[in-house]
Length: 99
Image (tube, rainbow, N blue to C red):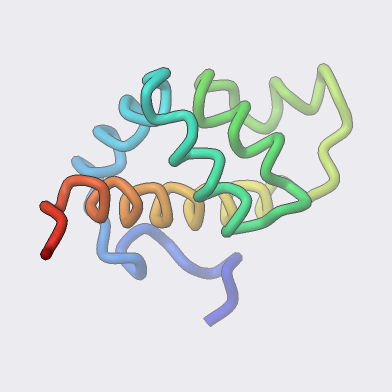
């Protein structure tokens, strides 16, 4: 399935988790994980994905301020993919280290 067609359910994430992830993405202590997730999801769009997720600014508002090298549909598809990757990184960080 193409990235553009994937919804949160395809990543195994429910709406309640999405809301929690959006809050966690704005937290200063999670910025490194957010950056890693965005770069892994779409390196050439990561700057815009990070800005959107960490500040809550949407595509339309950001596009008024600067050119975004993606369509609205692609931007939000990679934003979903980034949140899914961010979720995975958060879960990995929470697991106790096995010795």
